Image 1 (tube, rainbow, N blue to C red):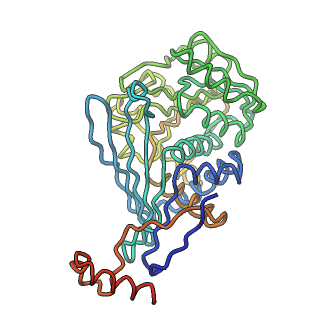
Image 2 (cartoon, rainbow, N blue to C red; image 1 turned 120 degrees about the vertical axis):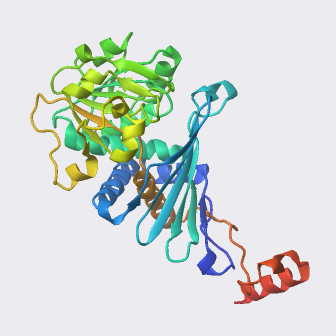
Image 3 (cartoon, rainbow, N blue to C red; image 1 turned 180 degrees about the horizontal axis):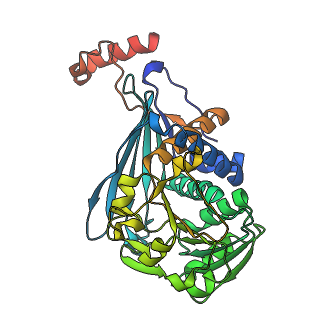
Length: 363
């Protein structure tokens, strides 16, 4: 275990750093199921405070190889942002498709209080958000799920639905059979009945919930209307940037569609295929009871999930609190400690710097 913050610097400048190994230690101590459930609770709590937040769609820089994005959000007390990429071809270089880190800062002073890895944490928060939405949108007796796209986030989706919704049966499909084999190995012993399928059509047949989480940055048609039975809930996760979709537009027309933050989803989600007049409901409205979720058993529901900054804010809060509880993390010397905060130039004078640092430590 890594040591908690121990520093002689002024506490007003403390920045806690959580590395990838710190996050895995938290998961090992608390348990993956407990962390998914706890994170879902944090996300729900923050969605219920929706009007308290200053929100915006993420800023994206697109290239032929992928996308790099910044995702900010703030309330009156804390500001957070996430840096995240999406490069589907990264596997050729031995790199993850998605890599991320995040910051949680004080609004009153601007001091960054937390810098944390968010690659692993993003997979957790995405799965927790999916399960949170499915609680409101899927049929309560749902026990089977098709999982189409068996890459890096698939285990987290499977386990979130198992722990938080009671999914017992998984039907898997990926055009990369090695990805499916990897997923089956990783889920062995988790208490689910798992079957590998030869097509998306086969995987979807008989499933209560269908999760699509493919990686290719393209307008794909993973699901078509004839594949979707009445009453199915679709957890559409893979379509998350302009020009990338997974569902045939007629599925959306036949369904009730729910989103995180409509201004962002209009440009990035499945509904980028639809006119601006196409009706959607934001998830926070369902959670606070101001809008209906699933209305009847035969209704087809779609959670058009692209990932929103408020989920990262909640995930950072969860990890910070877990780290403080477990004594995990390291002090990060990110902000200069100055005897005179107006004299930044003094840092360039070795003698002055030594004197200033001694004064700060003595204080």
